[in-house]
Image (cartoon, rainbow, N blue to C red; front, side, top):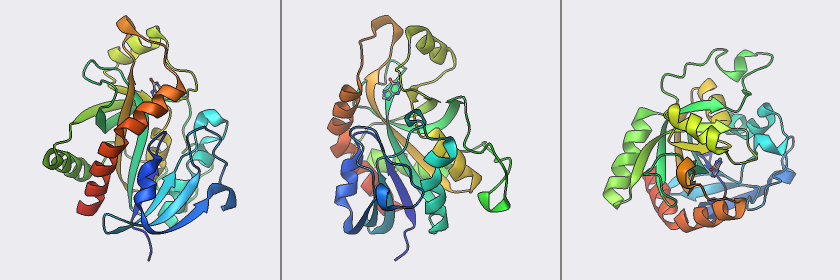
Length: 253
Ligand code: HPA
């Protein structure tokens, strides 16, 4: 059966893909024109099957700009999902907390974003099949889906904070001065993904929901060195709560 919902599982969050029933698994390496996932802790598989009584298509691991692929390549899977009939996209990632309340282990629902990646996947020659040339961004993250996510989290007793998310290119983590700037920009969380996928999804008028798993706190006053290993470890610790929440959201969509 054709999938209705797309799911992108970020760093350390791939476990939800294992809960998919009656699944078909396709390694990215076997998909024509897909880049190869080069990041440690990213599985690099497309999984289709049933989750929360819905037909879904999940990316276990994504492509990042910092891997050196152009924006239009890292977002190709979103266009593939659209061509397969998917109109609802749930995106997840590991992110750093910029605000005091955003302690490691928190889940945050993105309600808006700032693109600080210095690039944009929508730049380039235009054909109408790509969607709108000048996509509107007044509601990049569907209000209906956000309300559903909050209601679901409340019912499950899971804390789900709202956030403004900023995407940077990476791969380095931020300096103190950069974090102070982000605080001045009213940014709550920071990461190296999500925004390119959202821009393409919105160009295609897909409904988007994005959830950050906060894996570290980047506060200039008490900054600790962070590593990719720590990000992956904390994301894995959040996994049971993340899985519970996302599966229930999918059930209710
Ligand atoms: N900064 C940028 N990207 C991230 C972070 C961070 O602190 N944590 C996880 N991804």
